[in-house]
Length: 406
Image (cartoon, rainbow, N blue to C red; front, top):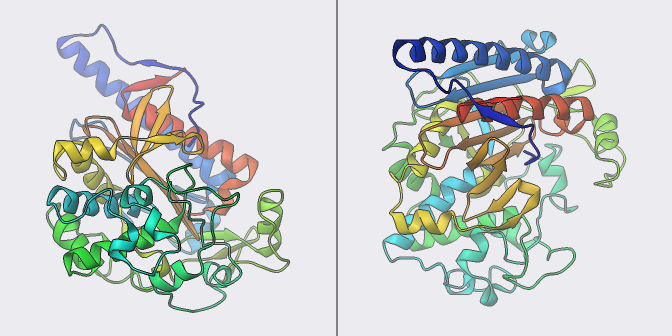
């Protein structure tokens, strides 16, 4: 999400009493209609399927689900469908780590070598804090020749976190631990292992015991394979995800990633040079991105976190202590992004897996929240799709903050 949003202004200022209530209701209806129109435009321009949920804290959330016409043959999208939230999972992992920090079991300045001897190259100089805020100096394994076939679903292999850490390269260009911010999934694979060692519990168990269970997030779980029909609310329908076929994908990434010819996502062919990526196994992403959830569930989590329900004040302050991360729209804390928009600062994260992209934020108090889910990840990198998607996210974020785009 870009920080360069259009200007905005407070809505409904100056009204009072019953007149204010009526004005507020009218503005909410108008905002909902505008968001619905923007969501449909985004879907038609390449987002394909869109879920928008805005909660201003008054108990009356706006819920929108729109999709391109041809996708209805695969699935009729609904606002409460399950979704792969990808790297939003990092905020859950970071919350679990900071709970252990508060309990005195993990130290932010502990070295990785202390917890995982011999597992992470250079681990004696990398701290838990550096893993959390992506200043470890580790590169990412995502586009390595060894892993790329699994990312695209062409190779069906179950990767362990230790195997992924073993193929993780150093940053390019190289950086010393603590020197620069560089986003890497490897950091959170290591954090998941540290959590399990410190607690003696599996990550999925920790998530259920500390997060999803207490918050009654019945539609949320950590994926261990490609199966959607799991968790306490099995049978819940899920969003169908899509990505461009090999030829279109290479064109989209031209100039940024040099993909070998013929590299594309596994899945059934769909209209518009798309493939259905819903059955690609995301379990490799684990502590870095393996959660399945819904817009409502994830807003419940993020609201609880930013309102101080899940962490003591000291640890929430540490989580919000950021390093510069302009590519994220502002700064990156300990598993939490600060995004500086023209309508105000928001806190949350983004996520992306084959077929799924998401942005979920709250205001500073955790009172207001917004979620925008899109049923393609690489597909919204095309110019028309990117423009329409940005317009939707910008408008939804400003609506969440009680402001209007000019």
